[in-house]
Each structure stands twice: as structure tokens, then as C-alpha cells.
Image: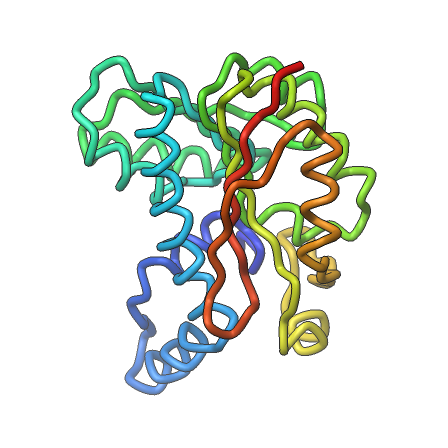
Amino acid sequence: KSGFSSGQMLDYVYQNRPRGWTPFGKLIDYFYLNSIGWVCIRQRRTHLQSLLREALESTQAKKVADIAGGPARYMLDVLQEYADPELRAVIRDRDENGLEEGRQLASRQGEARITYQSGDAFDSSEVASLGPLDVAVVSGLYELFPDNQLVAQSLAGLAKAVRPGGYLLYTNQPYHPTLELIAETLRHAGGKRWVMRCRSTAEMDALVREAGFEKCRSLIDRHGIFSVSMARRLPE
């Protein structure tokens, strides 16, 4: 119902609990959840949380945002580790269902420091309005769109939102072994084929650098499919 590329699907994959009406259904779901792409997605989440902790501590962050976070379970889990009552997180997404799921998750965890808002991650002015941010996150988004102009628009907004010395965490997909299978079998929420274009690390880093960020470090899974990088916002 939500599409294979949605935040709800990503949250389901993160939970990694095979489900189904019958044992056979659960078996099918087991193989689905343990396909190489989803296994590496879960590793990406671990890397993202690791770099997020590092960025929060380095900046003594008070405000962090994810511009296309869906339910953002990963953010909720990290927030639970920090008792600072002044720390605030804003999660934006175009999918209201994913945002509502996040609100319910936050409510169940008793986490009042996180806010879920509707927003377009490719609208530069909308993204810029989040500022000033200590840490911004864009995870699993740019990989879904082959047009570099869209990515540049989004990064331009992030450059305005993140204060100098703050950090941007971003993901990339330099390689994927099942792109054709995904394109032919999986669909977005609207029914369109899920077609992705891999970007080399150099191409993605260049887009980030042109926006005014300097990459500090990067983590990637052992299959080389998904990377998570941290970049520092340079002075104007």
C-alpha cells in the first residue's frame, strides 16, 4: 500500500521480523527481508546512527533535522540515548502516513522532543526554513532520483539551513547488484517502476562540495552498496 520505496517499508525492513498469515508466507518474507539490498540497508542504518551520535556530540547539538525521514525510528532510538531536554529533532516528509506512524512511535516512547512535519525535500526554500541546524540528515533519498539538478536544489537548501561548522549526514548508492530486478518487480506508492541510478562516490561528493560542505568521513557496508558520509558546513 505504501510502496516499496516508502518510509513505512524502510521501517518494516529495519524491524526485520518476518511476518505472514501462514508459515509459507513467513518464509517468503524471511527471504525478502534477507535479500542483499535490505541486509545492507540495515547496515546503513547502523552507520547512520553511529555518525549521527558523533555529529551530535561534536556540535553539542540543539537542533537536528531529517528532510525526508518517514517515521524516523532510527532518530527516535538515538534521541533516547541523550537526556538533554533542549535537544530538538524535526522530521519532514511528503508522505503523511509515514509522518503519522512516526508520531505514534514517538508517543509510545514518550519522546516529546521530536516533531513531524509535511515538507518537500527538493524545495530549496522549504529546506532552508529549517535552519539554523546543527545537524541535517538526508538518508535514502537522492538514490531514488537520477536527476542531479533535483539533488543540487535540495543541497542548496541544506547549505542555507545548516550553520557554519554544523554537519550534513548523507547517503549514497555507488553500486547495487539487483537494480534491474528492482525496476522490473517493485513499485513506488503511485505504481511507477522503482528505477534507480547509482552515483559514484566522486560524483556524490562533488555535489555536496559544490553546495558548500566538506566531507569528513564515510562508512560503507562490506558489499559496497550503501555509504553514509559526514560533511562539515564551510564558512560563507
